[in-house]
Length: 69
Image 1 (cartoon, helix red, strand yellow):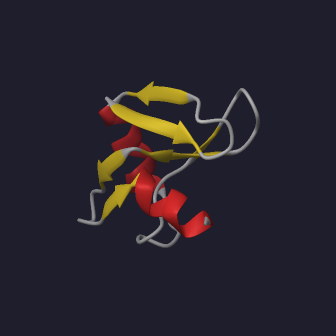
Image 2: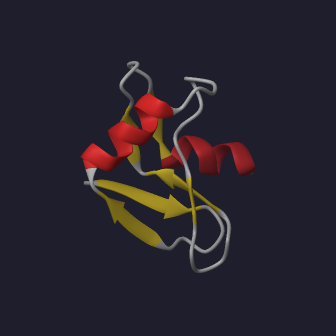
Image 3: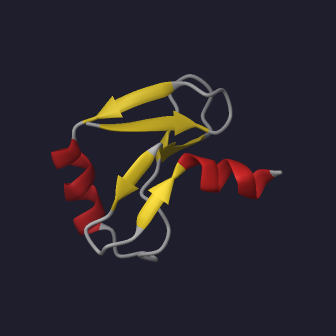
C-alpha cells in the first residue's frame, strides 16, 4: 500500500501498490513529478507519503509540503 496525503486537509488514503504502479506506468507526463490523486474530502491534490516510482524517482510528502512554505 502507498499512503497518499492531501496537501489541503491532510486526509490520508491508502492505495494498493499495484494500482499506483499501473497508473505510474500509464502516465505519459513528467517522470519527475509524482503521481497524484484528488482528495475526495476537499478536492486538493494528494501526494505520496513515500513512493519510489517505476522510473527510479523517489517522492516524499515533506518535499511537497516544504515547497509550499
